[in-house]
Image (tube, rainbow, N blue to C red; front, side):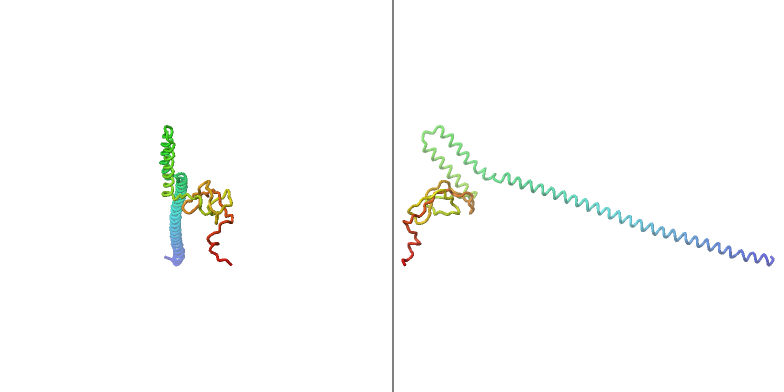
Length: 212
């Protein structure tokens, strides 16, 4: 082989080596790009999984919120219904207790149709009245007040008339309508006529005062 041919072969070698290096570099670049794409794909999949997880949590919280709102609305409706029923039927026990008195009045009315003795009818009505008053006092703490001779108290008595009389302190002269208390609260003032001191009778306090 001549020297010229050897030179040509030597010149061809670097070109082949360069081509191999370029090929290897291209392969490495392709591998890096593929690896980068795989990394990006993995990150994207993780992000999508996280988004899906968060969306699921949002749906669960939304469902819990809607359930809580529905439960609260049902509770409020039930409370309003119970309140209305309590108001509508608050007097049930009282009315049941009054039925006995109504039954007794019915019997008295029936008996009055054929009665020949008015006194017996009056006695029957008196018994019903006592029974009714006793029931109201014992079961409901309803107490009647206002009797002739009681001391006049403007907080519980309503004076609809007065007269000057020989009394030391204002007292009830007549009771036109009895008053009623529910426990300690006045629910109806007694309507009364009041005897006012005319100056002829001294009160005990004034009588005990020594003369100056």
